[in-house]
Each structure stands twice: as C-alpha cells, then as structure tokens.
Image (spheres, rainbow, N blue to C red):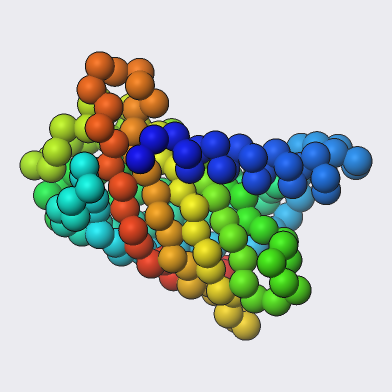
Length: 171
C-alpha cells in the first residue's frame, strides 16, 4: 500500500470543508462528541498477515472545520509501539440520513520497533479509512483499514497495514 489512504483523507476532508465550512469560516472551531476508542486488528506486512495489534484512541470534543483532533497509541503482539496525534474526518449523513458513516484520518507519529519488521525509521504516518455504525447511545462500531509508512523520508519504506474493528465510547 502506498499513500492512497492519505490522499483519500485529504480529498474527503478538504472537499467537505470547501462545501460546508468555508462559507462561514473554513477552520472555525466547533463542538462534537468526544470519544475514547478501543480496537483490535490483524497487522499485514508485505501482503502477509503477521500478527495482531491493540489500539486505544481519544477523539477530542471539538472540530476545526471538518477536522477533529485525535490521538492514539497501538502495540503489536511483537512489541512494536506507535504513538501519534493528528486529525480525523467523519461524514455527516453523506451515505444516508442514518447511523452509517465513513471516516478517514491522518496521524503523524513515533514508532518504536520491537521484534516486528523493520518499517524504516521512527517517524511513521498512519492514515486510515473506515466504515462505521453509530449506536443510539453515542457509541460507534467501525471497521477500518490503515497504512503506516514514513512517506519515503527514509531509504527503507515498506509500510505496515492493519485491518481492525473499533468500538468507541462517547462521553
């Protein structure tokens, strides 16, 4: 996988901003639901599933235009750890006026290698695309696919992907 998910994040969030936010101020601060999320998934390296990962994230209770600040930490079963801060975009009734939503995100972060594969350095960008369902209590359930890489800032850049399921609690 290359930078496709990062491009999808840019296209979805910037198009939404141009259509819905810029008429009143492109990056005006707004309020949204803050969530604590937990996810588990299978990690993929060079087209082979190599293990599992657990992930915990926090989505802040504010937005700047369509961008919601988010932060996360993940650990694989081989001891690889990633810690990042960035932004996510979530659709607002794009598919239907109902509980289904699409989300994308981009988070630069620091990667601490354990016994997993060498993915080319400490600075790793994590981009994701997911489809989810909003529950009546404000919680969400999502299926996500993400890609981590150093965006060719290092000589080695094989990337690492994760296919996961996330449960997020609203508070």
